[in-house]
Image (cartoon, rainbow, N blue to C red):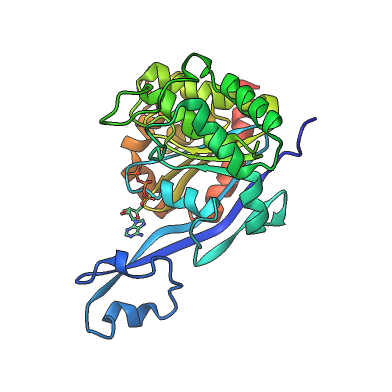
Amino acid sequence: MKKQGCEIEAIGIHYTIYTNERESFFSRKQHKCIKGVQELEKGDNNNNPTSIRHVLKDVNCRAKTGEILAIVGPSGAGKSTFLEVLAGKIEPQSGSIFVNQKPVDKARFKKISGHVTQKDTLFPLLTVEETLSFSAKLRLKLAPKELSSRVKCLIQELGLEHVAGARIGDDRIRGISGGERRRVSIGVELIHDPGVLILDEPTSGLDSTSALQIIDMLKTMAVTRDRTIILSIHQPCFRIMKLFNSILLLANGTILHHGTIEQLSLRLILLGLDLPLHVNILEFAIESIDIIQKQNHTLLPQSALMIKNSVLTIHVWDVFG
Ligand SMILES: Nc1ncnc2c1ncn2[C@@H]1O[C@H](COP(=O)(O)OP(=O)(O)OP(=O)(O)O)[C@@H](O)[C@H]1O
């Protein structure tokens, strides 16, 4: 039986950090609510100068059931931070997150979501099957027989049958390949069959074929099981890009585009940019970020951007409809 899908909406997310120039920020609470910003700018009680960093500024997005939303942008744009906010790992200073139009309940959201971080944190000496069984025992209250059948189904879904009995391995112990390891990490977060899967760079460090296989697998999961997938990615190739339903382009913590790839191309054209033939639109957009930002500042405040997006939708239908 199909579970109810989850539509995720984030509205007006602001996330600010402050760093102390002499004292490492790691020794302090990272996501403290910034109230007296001016006071902090002057320094702390020990007169250590403190600087404020606005990592996310008024970020809004919607990820629909059965779809993949890809978060893209240059390094340091705020992609991982935004995913952590969505996954409930860090608290934004302001903004709201809704699941199926209802404010998110953190405890419940943990049960219905999975968060795959950028780095694989797996036990190198366990086999693939043991790793997934361990996660299943922790997360599911099922009888051993049912647990084992859930693990076997997942191994099949992840395309890992050929390495089910192989060790995970790491830099020192030879084990499964990097792509297979990423799949196991995804499996660990999929064991409880979450409606929402949040993945930070699921293809990092992989060759283009392995990267495509992973995104293809996620797409199949999204479509066949009505899962909502939100992921961050660096430089996806054209075939991967085609699998995304929408794109959130971030730079310096602000949204430059939220919509389809076709809408992004049209937006670039409307900004007066010449799109070279056979160019990867995302790469081109990221290379043109300075121009887009400048145009947005002079021409398009955030509200106008939204209006422009809907206008662009009409254009897309005119052109592709
Ligand atoms: N706790 C923190 N302390 C200091 N700086 C932080 C913290 N969290 C985020 N940042 C800064 O905020 C910015 C956004 O970080 P984030 O990791 O979200 O970027 P990203 O787009 O995921 O980058 P990448 O593609 O390189 O992984 C970076 O400049 C980062 O250094």
